Image (spheres, rainbow, N blue to C red):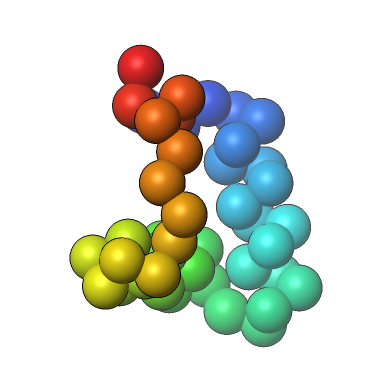
Length: 45
């Protein structure tokens, strides 16, 4: 489940980029899989 605040932030980011939230998450996933995003151990809890 995605917290409401994070969901709303994702919607805002997607709107700014002119893409869907699904595409935004696909982009983030591909960046993570390619090692392009910085590691944030605090988000793993």
